[in-house]
Length: 131
Image (tube, rainbow, N blue to C red; front, side, top):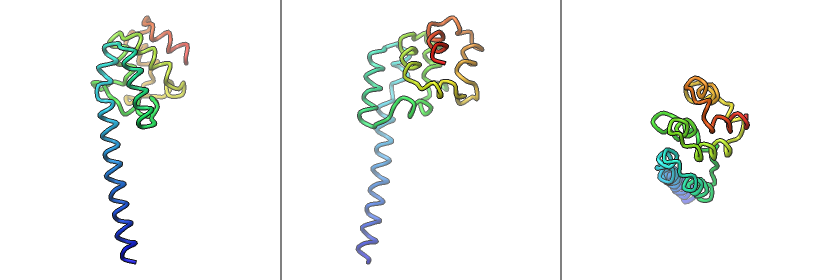
């Protein structure tokens, strides 16, 4: 009976350590995604998204809310940086339901775009087509 308890404690401890390492690895993999979006490097962004999907089985919608670029989401960062290609890719990869959902500040993406005067942006036209 004591061996079973020791074994189960060992397995539980190992799983917690592994989970912590996996979380750190995802953060490491996504570390420079803000820079990639700001630089409007669509091919590098696509590679980064594909790497995270293949290595960690996470799609954009799974980690989108957890990534903050100076307090803004990835799509908002693309708008501010005038990163048309990256922003368009992000909008096309996000599910419509999440594009309509309020972000951290309680505003939907469409409301934020309108308030900040980005309605003329090509990203806004892609966003409006998707919504």
